[in-house]
Length: 355
Image (cartoon, rainbow, N blue to C red; front, side):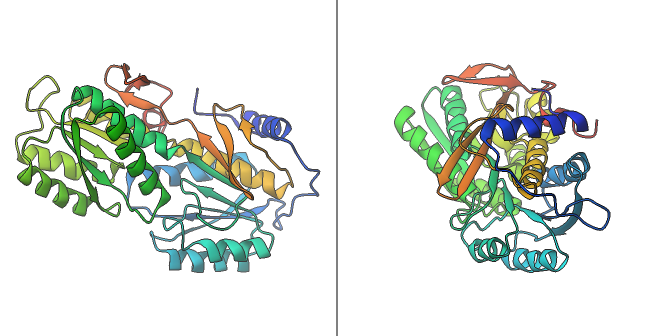
């Protein structure tokens, strides 16, 4: 699917979504003095390539949806997120987009916004309590399963792998971890998994990988739950003489999650072997489209969308649009029944950033 979409097509797509998924007759759009609805967008952090890519896409899709944006950055701190939301409320926003990294602690903030009838769209993460108009996210359990099957096939079902987990206070970290472990247990019982919690911290991930390789020099696979660990992992492997081509017996197979441009380059170079492309562009696009739909009084229901995804009901009061996130490899092959796309495929956002 082509990632880019002109403004007119985006409006048409939104109208199609509303028709397909059901629409309640909403009143007119609440707007700023200039006629545009004011929406607050809180960025969760700006210290990773993935989130910096998301940040670059937000203004583009804000303009396409006719929104005036107020932005903030909570820097992975739920107390800052709470303060930023208070600021948005004081600025009269008609909707809020956020990506809470602590998915339990955000509940009071969601309750406050709900009481003020300000719709919320969460991106990438799903709140564990409280309502939101829509969650825009990929199936994070599928991330773990795809990583498991790729490594399981590459290692022929035997050996040792390290899983550099994210933050287990995040539903993303838990989903990826639980799914990877469950898949390994069921499909590749001959593989030993060393799980290391890293709190999405690259330096900590590097340290823990170093420790595991010292204790288990025969480790043959690494699953990084995000590109946060990319540079540190490559550095550790290089220091140990393990950063060698895939056809070298010393090669350690590495799979990541995100699909940032650097990951695609490292796959092409043979330094890592795969990633799961988490759609930074689509996160921005649909988060803002759903926010505009909420302001316009439209509603949605579970089912297939017209953009290659499925809306599921997580619980009463919470819907989640699970966007497509393909496995990306050097050869575009199929691993454990999971098909992949080649690293240079033009549909990948990581190959189109900046174009």
